[in-house]
Length: 434
Image 1 (spheres, rainbow, N blue to C red):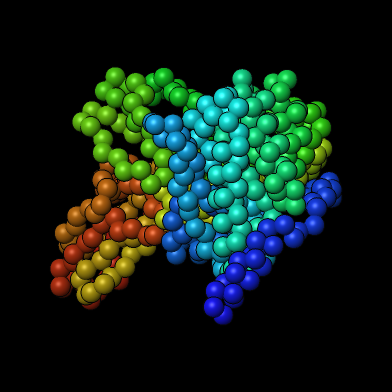
Image 2 (image 1 turned 120 degrees about the vertical axis):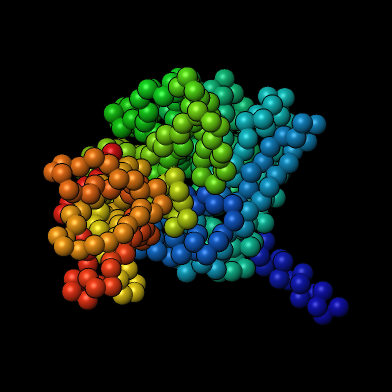
């Protein structure tokens, strides 16, 4: 009985925490200052994710955390898949925490039928459970955000759902993600007034027709126009900028055949080709500098989609994002070095010494030292290409990831020569080709 009474008292305490925060008051940031937040979009919090959060703490004013995805099943029932952040790690950060619920566009069918109540109840159930879990581990959730690519024709019904949530979460920062096309809708200002702010997503990838179609994830000139339109609406917003990329697949005729996002396996059919498109760190860094020099009216900050994690393949490295946050263009450079793991054996290693993972090639020019006899072979994806002047060996291969040097070739020197020379070749030039 004592245990039961204690459990009931503990539950009452946690649920009291759901409504114990003071009302939120927004103020414009000081000139030149735009708070920085990061989306953490991983469904499983591996040690890589934990390390990424801890590494970013000094630059984070907030984190926006995916906690659930809801959708309609083929039978029309509401379903949800929940994810569980490491609240103990987030509590250590001291940053503002916002939970994000991703709502599939299929759920809009219920809103169209004026069935807002069951959707709001499910969102509330998920949000309350996340808030309680965070409180248990010492983390305070200050915000709730809904992420949905709602059709423009249904923004009024979406607003009715947000109004219902506003009543339930009056002491939380309520927000939603918004597409730039929504800004022209007559229904958008009313929708925006249901929330404390909206997140203007100025990133997307248009479907390419062919392999020659120019690709960009964030057109910063268009983004600047979108931000100006948001300013004119006169309601609080933040701007979401991208760090991610895609691997695009094209068929034998060069026609678009599909794409791969982070974590999705891929197996290319014969004759198909793949191209990687990443967010342009140079253009985005310049865009951020312009925003900071004159913060847009009613803009409450920049949120990055998404926080780089060491195991990401199609995302900026943390060093790239850190350079952009510092107002710089990320440095690009590679180096090569000779290592000798044992007498007579030499290896050529390539190292990414820059601040960016590059989907390009690195070329290394090496000259054999005269008078040394050796055998050699290439490693991994490195190949030997024609070089000028004659006698120079030019190797080409993928630029390695930051922190992950790769061997490009090995050289075996005759025993008689191994004691007379430090290594059989000299490195002349290392260059990046994109």
